[in-house]
Amino acid sequence: MDTRVIELQAEPLIRLAKSRDPTDREQLLARLVDICEANFVAFAPTASAEIERVFLALVREAELDIRVRLADRIAHAEWAPPKLVDTLVSDDVEVARPLIAASPLLKDETLIRLLTQASLAHRLEVAQRPRLSAAVVEKMIDQAEPAVLTALAGNMTADITPEAMARLVEHAKTITALGAPLAAHPRLTTHLAEALYLWVGQSLRSAIVARFEVDAVALDAALAAAMSETTPKRILGPKPSEIKLVDKLACGGQLKASYLLRVLKEHQLGLFEAALAKLGGFAVEDVHKAVISPDRPELLALACAAVSIDRSAFPSILEMVRQCTDGLPGGGAEGARRASSAFGPFPASVAASAFRQAVSAV
Image (cartoon, rainbow, N blue to C red; front, side, top):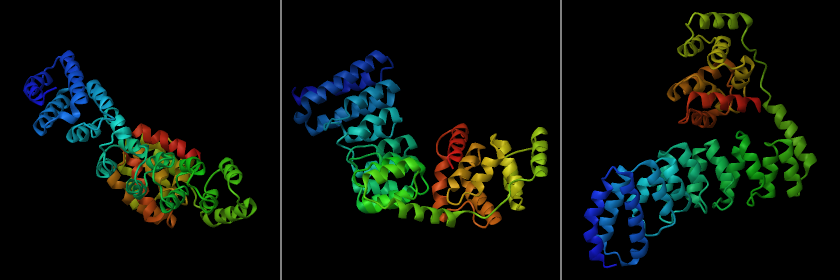
């Protein structure tokens, strides 16, 4: 098609894009994609700019289902306008998914921007993108987000360097879900498999022994020694009188999340645990287990997120709890940073469910 004809058609297409009739938008979508697919190499610079204007007008006005179909149509296209791709990958994850998975136009800079600015759902899609570069992989590992790292570990085509694999194995110490994909990963070495052996369950240890030439007897001895070194000191949970007081406050409608900070400032750990359990509908024993965890502060973070504690308040809560327990829950500064992912963009009910699942696995 002559490029002058394409340029002359731009304004009518823009007017069609502004129509609120879904039928018009469906027609526009089909016509635009057909024109671009047929004439990509023939576009003059001005025609490309006009086509981009039309696409962006459509995206601003179109319903979600049309944007989804548009993203799916152009997912593998090399002709797609860069601004259009950038707009769509920042859209709802249903729109962004096909482009994140397949678009040849996405550069590392865009993928890293999604990792730092987009939703958890977007970050998970990035982690599963085929043939991720080492730079993007390193950024994910730096962020240390459990769900994203687990998705990355299952991405067999990602450029995971030996150093990056070592860091993933180290994260498996505190992220249980990493064990299975790492144990099956083709880039796992015998040396790293021996390290991973210490952090996984019996079934995965058996898989590691079957796959690698490792000394299971020596590793089991090392595992027993490691467990004895990390056993926390005896810290008692809430007293019956503390549980009774919290129940009384709850019955009178006086138990609020702010109560947690108040009792911690007074170093009343038992009241804190009883109140957190009551507010979240948790077993007191489960909250106590989270408080004395040797290396998983994210358990306590999930419990706090479940009762609508703000992310910004958690570092203070964690510090005050550690003052009452000689440093528990453990994990240091790195653990505290990792725990911040418990306050992700999801409802409190999701955090509550995640807490129950995670603590039951401890």
